[in-house]
Figure (cartoon, rainbow over the protein chains, first blue to last red):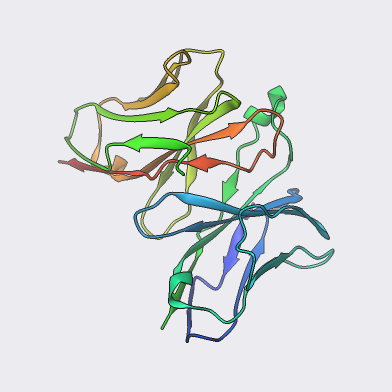
Length: 121
Length: 114
């Protein structure tokens, strides 16, 4: 039973290039989340998607960043014209449920992938 | 603005000792408090979680203590082992909101010496 799959594991881009990070959720999970982890900081929420819909992008920078989760295929986090400050680990997570509040939500933890480490040179 | 404050930043404990990591929050709408464990090069993995109507939850050597009035919660690792050496994150999410919209603390790097 494969977990959340992210690729590539490591990505090096020069300033101004585009970075594409891919995430395949766990089987049976239709909710995908992207988080960013800067050195010595906790994870920061970026965006929450369901198939073909962006549900919450309140944590996404307004410019250069976009995300999608198409009907077929993995979720993609896209960073255009990367800058050095974009260097970080980007984690994708998935869950079978969307909302908290019910008993079942406590039994449905968020499952994280092993991340993509982006380095901008 | 860090909604969940975690301390200490790093912790060194001898094998067999007790590791204690503390977290505090302000937002009373938080109703789910998970702890995640992260090894180098890996993603965070859920360790244990607690609801605000429970003051303590124990799973094996790991215990969460929750103080609702003080808005604090802590992770206790009993009989700490070298294999527990990892970064630990506390987190919280808001009642009725997106399950995966977690607010994380900055993390505690735990080192357990043999």
